[in-house]
Image (cartoon, one colour):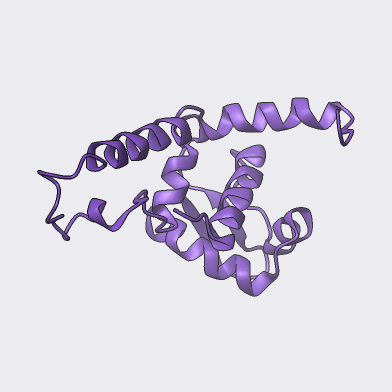
Length: 146
């Protein structure tokens, strides 16, 4: 599984919106400047999140984006799944692609376990918890090599 740039930026945008929750709307420009995302790319990456009911958009002069759900009930896994980043690791885990070797493959159960553990890790903390952690990290100085 490779986390695409689109998914990474979707996560960054969702965290930014979670920091401002319950703001009615955050401008596209503000999100782009804060997270280093181009306006066209932001619109593109937020479409799946809008479709999934995680983000809502408002058009017009005072338009922008906002979380449509409480960030205490959203996780990275929710964002990743909405951004269409399946937790596969291997094609034998595709839903509509039965694995011919499932019954005889000693690795199949490891693929399943690894996928399930990754899902558990990405659903461990809510966006609210990640925002709080982000705030704590910002108060520390980052030093390379320490």
